[in-house]
Image 1 (cartoon, rainbow, N blue to C red):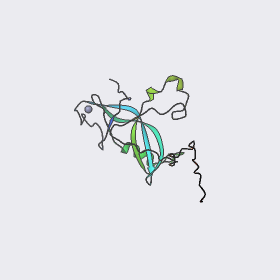
Image 2 (cartoon, helix red, strand yellow):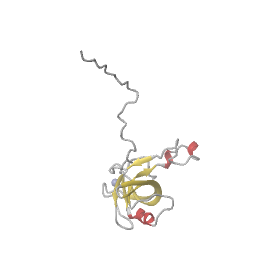
Image 3 (cartoon, rainbow, N blue to C red):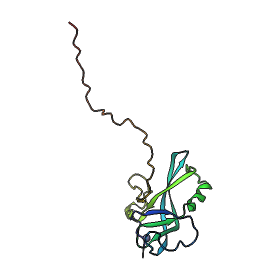
Image 4 (cartoon, rainbow, N blue to C red):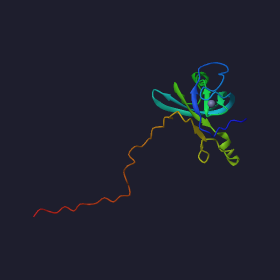
Length: 155
Ligand SMILES: [Zn+2]
């Protein structure tokens, strides 16, 4: 069977090596499958870059949304450094990238570029840290008229 990457997965950090056996959630067989993951990196508590990386180390349950993956699989390439990336010393795997969701006519647009958003399917049990908004003072309404109070002169 093929794994449906459009289904939000439940991420289970699995620290072991080799075959984890059956699904810890439902006991069904697991299947190792190549997938594209979205990672967010942090440095000193601040969000650095997010990037996609492929790995065939994830174990997908064939019956339920469970996904077993050893986070160490990603920490090694990160620690070696990635030229051109602002990679922090912490990272979070936030979801899968459903590359099949990209329509063929957008094949020549880089993923994440305007017009071709990343088809991120976030894990159901991981709260992705959101990038801090640059501007916070958006509560002002620039179009609102200023009411001028006419001051009455004292009599
Ligand atoms: Zn399962």
